[in-house]
Structures are given as structure tokens and as C-alpha cells.
Image (cartoon, rainbow, N blue to C red):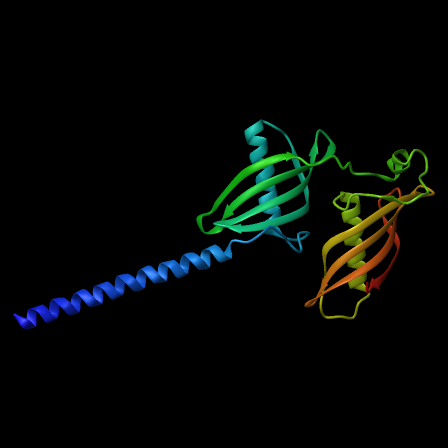
Length: 234
């Protein structure tokens, strides 16, 4: 009888210990999962990111299906992400609507391990019209030769910034690539029919973040030329 009681007591102890350990382990796992949930942060390297582009195209397709629309995806202008149960992507997109460029903002929830995507929001971006060399003068009431602040998410500004990064990379002897992280400031003006951009860029170079001031011109044919830059140490 004593032996049976000892066996039962031992089994009860082992079972209680095991359940307690599992409960503790689950609490630890829950805490770790909660710690993984973070704030919204920028996605780097969106220009040639097939994953981000795929999510953006999905957003446009879902919007077209839900609203019986005919928007055509053009490119991703800006992308941010937030870790949740999966990831939520906040995208600024350039689309073509009846031949005209328009900006939209999309919110997409993604759980890769479940092959799950859900478009949660799709709306017009705040009114920041994409400018051309012709309407720069119009926006300045004819004073096209003066600098004006322009939106950093404007597709023309984005193209100019990426051209600068490519030019820096081509003339660099570094084995580390330069990657555009953010356009900090952007100004533009018209000189003799061409647009001139004055940019302050934040780039990633190896493990370092560096800033560059740059000026670049774009002619009426859409070609960039006379690109100049220097590192900003402020």
C-alpha cells in the first residue's frame, strides 16, 4: 500500500511540474510574441523589392475587384511596415487612372506562413500633385526661376533621388552599395525649360547612414544630366 501511495505521489508531482512548466513556457512565449509587435517603420530598398511590389499589385487588383475599377499599377512610392500577427504594410502607390497618374494609399495585412493577404484600406493620397517642368512655373505664378519646396513623395522627386544614388554608386570604388533610405528635403525650379532639383538624401552605405546634398537637372525629354553631390556632415 505504501508503495502504491509513493508511486501515485511521484506521478502527481511529475504531472504538476510538467503542467506548471508548460504554463510558464507559454507565458514566456506570449511575452516574446508581444515583444515582437512593434511600431511602424520604413521599408528600405523598395525600388527592386519584388515582395513589396507584389503586395502593391495585390492591393490594386483587390481594389479594382471590389470597386469595379480599372486602376493600373505604376510603382511603389513609399512603403512602411508594422509587425503584428504577420505584418501590416502601409503603401503609397502611383497608379494610372484613365491615362492620368494618381496617388493612392493602401493598407495590406500579410501572414506569409498562411499564404494570407487582406486589403484593409485603399484611398486617395493627400493632394500632392506630381509636377512637370511645365507646371512648376504655373504653381509659382510665373516665377519659375525661384526655388520652391516640393513633396518628397512626388514621383518626379523620387526618380531624381534614385538617379543621384545610381550616379554616386557608379563613381564610387566602394564594395558596399548605396541604398536610398529617405528624401529629407526637396526643392525644384525651372531654368530654360528644364527642371532643377535640390535634394537632401539619407542613404545607407554598408552599416552606416550617410547624408548627401545633391543637385540634378531633368530636360523636357525626361533625361537627367549635370548631377552633382557632396556628403553632408551636419
